[in-house]
Picture 1 (cartoon, rainbow, N blue to C red):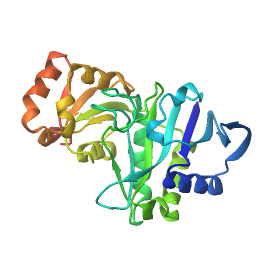
Picture 2 (cartoon, rainbow, N blue to C red):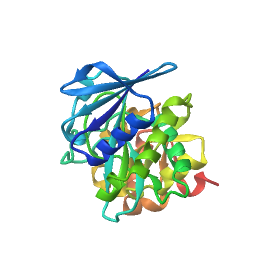
Picture 3 (tube, helix red, strand yellow):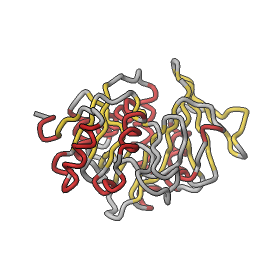
Length: 275
């Protein structure tokens, strides 16, 4: 398997993570370059891992998979949030609505749910006692590409972007996952709830299912049959069912239930799922 790690010179957290990765993990500089930037490689078992650096904002790096040959892309990114918490987050990529933050409007990318679960489980173990918290985020922003992609982020303020302790937790998590024999899970996608989705987090931590795409309630206005088909098609492996954040469906509950039933999509309620 070929895995591309993507760093950006425009992102201070990404620069911090890259420096820590190169100092701590055994990557070696390769002979070829990507643009003007060096490429670094790491081989383990059947995994050919390469670290690339781009000089543009990551969320606007559409079609990078046309320039880099890889099976899956992991973007090493900053996380920004108004609450200022020390957070390490990971999430699927795509837009339910407009594309002001990169990608294509109303278009999702392929989410490798097994890899997302492996990262989140490892991260949740590694943040204990560090002052950082681990959480999934709902699907949002670009870039668009046709290969599986996820973002792994360090944040949520400039202080954290440059924090070496946070970068070391990040790199330890990433390398442990990449070095491990990754597991296989059945997958689901989540509908409802907030951007930081409690049901998705709990599903990852407490069940044998891997969460793929997450549609939060603030994007319900964009939820239609086309988006539903993308949630199914672009969660990898194909989801077994939709998991509904039951308390987080609000006034849209009946419309969402009708949409799922009319398309013969199996669903489960979160208030009964963890019993």
